[in-house]
Image (cartoon, rainbow, N blue to C red; front, side, top):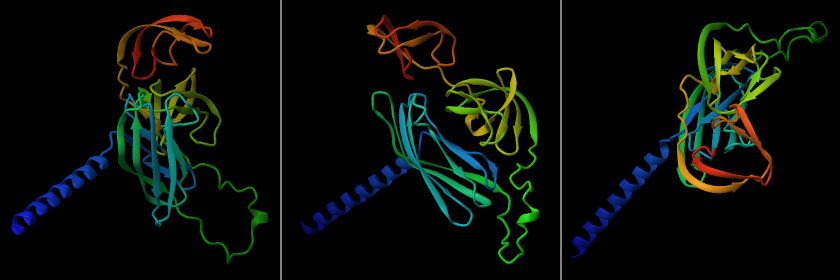
Length: 278
């Protein structure tokens, strides 16, 4: 009898161990993607973004950058669909030259009905930080009077490879006057917007055509893959505008305006999309 009980206990322990292992494996595989630049110059800023599934309404994750000297920086992504203050990205400073490992951990994703899409996955990427750390000048003479007009902050020369292709944004992003996060912002694009790319630089930036002018977008926010169309669930509801809003030709805030609703105005809703458009 004791032998039989021991065998049963052993089997239960083995099954529990296998289940724990399987749970760990599932949590380690994320449905999200991780977008970070392949290389940046030391001292410059770079952005790490989660590429979320089309039905994601909210998400969060801890993002850690481990530099070549072993030091780390950690920031939190808290994303809410349609809210500019809660983007799907965070920005770091490339403070140490060498290969840096980027890890997004504890990824939690939910849809618009608060159903869990993912709970606890992770993704890892790498960024090559180019350049050398500043030399130690503590024992050298003070030459500040002769170096006040140096160009140490001037960006290195960037080489662009010509391109001519339509690309799509993977998240909300800025369109800038130059290939630097310090340059002027010319405008913003929402996730899924299309734009023509005319060049790809070796520093993680893309040259684009924006409102008839040359502009720049960080390449980590661009993909050649066209976003999937949202799925609409048919309905037949009487609804009322909760605020003044635009009516658009398509399911995007970038599409053409075809009308306008005032707060309290009645409309008939015939479909609801998984991206919150109706």
